[in-house]
Image (cartoon, rainbow, N blue to C red; front, side, top):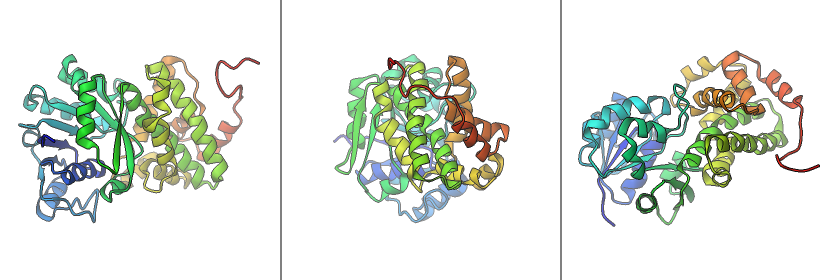
Length: 340
């Protein structure tokens, strides 16, 4: 394999885990960290003591605080950033991005400002031509399990077959299966919206409502994801795949899920701002809830779970009242299009 020079932009737990994964395959990786203490710890101790403590990083991972150094001369750039900072960071790296470089986004979210997914942000900042070099990596993957080489699978979505295959080859290993999708928008939407449902699942678990309630939220949450995702242009089969249903199940049930953990804290009666101040890492579902709610209004779609999570996060509605109101909603047929 051609040993591409790789830059990873974002040294949170997911960016660090992906850098670890790529370095394990022998790629030289420059890992850009925003936080000075993260950069210094990786540089001096070969460990991300803030976001992925206890994991020894390889010698072919080189930490940097300089975006220019992380981007210059690279053949593949992997972005693992919270969506709300993606546009600003992309604008800073534009002067250093060389023609033909592969662009992979691994962050999961929908921008609150313009209500667009990361692919649209890349297009607006880097120009229309970047779509043939752009792909999105998403799926049911926890950072901790990637660095322990636990079996996992994800999806790489791109409009360009050649780009998808090239990125698939870069990331694939015998224990990390990467499938190709020709619906990058659907891959993005599934990865973003499932975080909102995970917050709801965390609230339900925190209130002690049991496995039946969790299964109800996951199943109806997927239906709501499909309803909104298809309105935005996603293919329904994408949302039933790894980057949709697969990621939804993992994030709603796994103890390593930041968004489920956020819901558990909400169930204790804590407010959004209080929990955010206590968390080191970003729970993307909080901002995605805001975006999803306003997209529902834009497309005139009803989605009860999304709406109730929004009420809890942004209108200070109590978790118990929200779940009571959810259960009291009028119901109809399970799937649209079914004839009586």
